[in-house]
Each structure stands twice: as structure tokens, then as C-alpha cells.
Length: 116
Image (cartoon, rainbow, N blue to C red; front, side, top):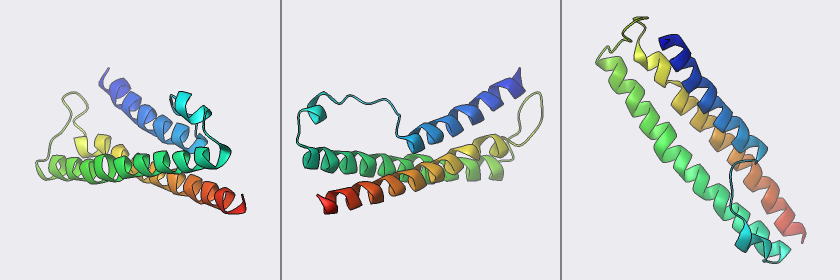
């Protein structure tokens, strides 16, 4: 039961990074659809920057602090008795993946914006 729960955390976090990389995350684009193509690109860049900021602050910095604290306190899981830092390490890892994918998307959108 405990292993399944930890694997679900890993799959969920890696899945979120994958979906961010494919640019298929949940979005409400009612206002964006009414804009011109150039303004749509600008809005998409702003959205990618906001996602990147969230990934840096919450996932990488916050996740790293969480991993550090659980490692220093030597917290282990109840049944498996593995360090919880191993379970939580996926948060900053997936944050780094999200940052990479968002930076790649920003570069692509910026090059499209320059050509128009």
C-alpha cells in the first residue's frame, strides 16, 4: 500500500512535467482566442514565464527544502522504512523538467514572434 502511494506521487509529478513539456496542460483560453496571432504569442510567453516562476519557487526551491529537511531529520516511511527524502526528491526533479520545457517553449514562441 505504501509503495503504491509513493509510486503514485512519482508518476503524478513526472506526468505533470511531461504534460507541461507537451504543452497540453489544462488551460482556459477564451480571451486568448479573441486576440490577434501576435498578441496570442505574447500571452503564451507570459503564461510560460508564470509557470516557470512557479516551478522555480514552489517545486525546485520548496521541494529542495522539503528533501533537505526530511533528510536531516532522518524521516523514514512507516512500513518500508526508506528515507522520505527519496520519495520527495521527485518534486525538484520534475520542477527542473518543467523549467526546461517552459524555457524551450519560450524560445520557440519568441522566434515565432520575431518572424512575424
